[in-house]
Image 1: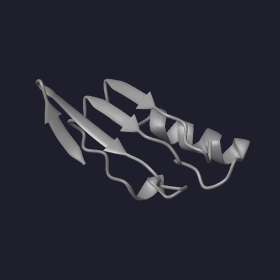
Image 2: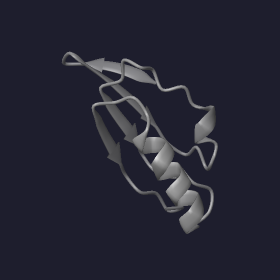
Image 3: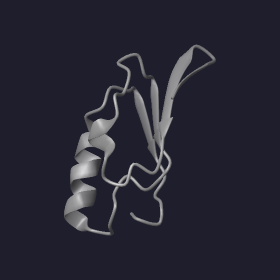
Amino acid sequence: MLIPYLKHNIFAFADTHGLHNRLTIPPETDILICAGDGVNNIDDDELQRFLCWYANQPAKLRIFIAGNHE
């Protein structure tokens, strides 16, 4: 969901459980927030793939809050 706030566009998501590749992050996103459970299992390889994907998304600032699956 893209949320305009004080001249910034915020995109927030959570609980993708490994399906983050299905998200379309708008290119005009200024702040990207993942509120946990980007992966489905507590697995180093899966978490590394998610974090690599997350780091390559369009945004000036990224905020990541770990969930119980991370």
